Length: 330
Image 1 (cartoon, one colour):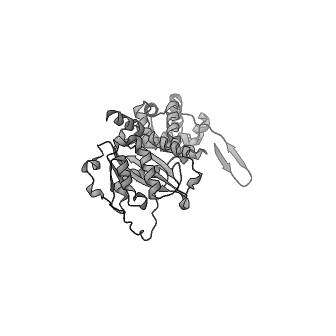
Image 2: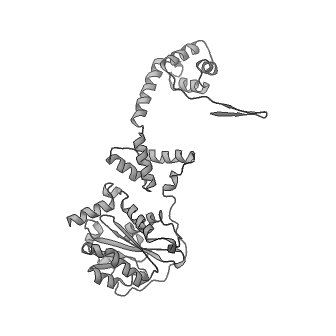
Image 3: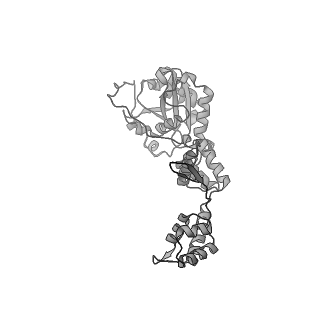
């Protein structure tokens, strides 16, 4: 639809787009030979003059002659190529399902190829953009922006009793080939309204979270033991950061019969997997949330959703599936 405006009135001219057929292309050639303008040809064929202009511009030979045979051949080829990349309604349903599950376009594309619904992540981004332009909300399911780091002095270094540094951790842990090596961290609520203890298994990417009323060593240690108790035969090591909440690491090590190591100060990349999952958790529990308003059921739902999110590094398998496979094989 084209809207034309002037000082006296506004009128709406509706001109539906129609692809030119072979017969119309021969008519265009004849009208051009007789000296008709693009506008006159468009009026006679009941199409926009811009359509005629574009058609001639696309299909000129040596810059001057319009050949209807060549134009028709190119048109057929374009339609065939477009058909190759058309996306079925079922595939679109799968794309929207993945977006509503907060999967990334790359994850959706990877899984789509595995289940017979191939679609590129570029197409998905375009689909989301088109949906947004028509008032849709799919764009809200995508992750936005980059993490902002606060400037300022670093906090005073905490002395953790009997701390064992990551440099003493077995080298096999770095390779992420052994099942049973975990990373630990905490996510804080607004103004001391509690914390979320998070654990992730390095090989399967299986993620565990639990809310605690305070970020204290006693609460965090109790939560870690409770979260890992049923999997205690699959806990070889735990790597944590240097926060005071992990001062109870010796109790954790004793209860779970495991070894606890600590990353170097200000080296979050040494626990990069856990940092990544905590970032994903913010899609469900946003930063600055009063954790007193978050229920255990919401925590469980977020954990379940993240463990069912396909991961590229797992061949687009889900962490929960891989974790259970590894447990069964151990």
